[in-house]
Length: 298
Image (cartoon, rainbow, N blue to C red; front, side, top):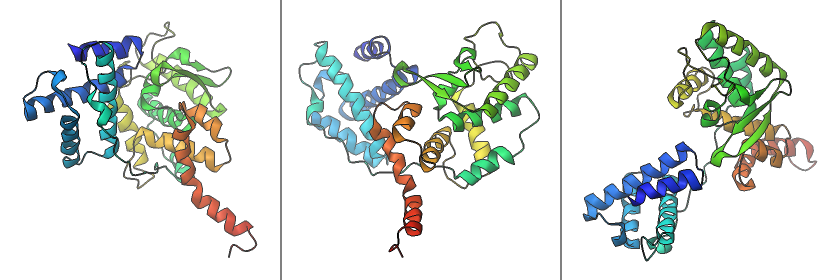
């Protein structure tokens, strides 16, 4: 019951996305399963900081990364804060729980030459799916939007006249992202092809922009398969997910002189710290510039 109330609070009061709420639910389900199997506990009132720490130890033994564990701890912090507020528990066991130290991991990205190869030399299938796949890749790289955000795009999201798209990001925050003329032309061609070859509702402006060959909204696994398929042709990176193109978008902008605050707004980051991780990827370029420009660099 407590979990259900908490999830409703996240969905309707905090207005978190379905994806975020599901992540919280998964974390809590895992925690309650641990309480039941390890301590034979059913009541959250019996939870202590020692029990929570033992869960952390078990997660570490399962080779769960510190970052993932900290996310689960953040879930518990929010959960117990809610329970205290609702007078469902008297003491907060999370007060004595300290977050794990994260090893700083720089975001991977595709180099610019490989991106040019992807869009200028790779041949996409001469079909609706081929055209859609190319648009998915172009949108991800040209705008840096997340996988959930590209799935959420509707016909109304696109302003072809001003070359902007309206994106609904985390915590239902809207932002406008500009895009270039070639992408605008591709969007027009795609929409015309979609409306002529796929059974979709062309009268509803809120219907999904990107669809399957059956006219249904794209789903996360399909977007991942599209990106993975084509990135595997041009890069040896171990990770070839949609988020890699988001990293690539941000890194290429920084490498080409874009202001970091502007990139922050384009990415929809809540604070600058989340964006600054991309500055580390430019250090090799800065070293090259220094060696070439400084009289005593050699």
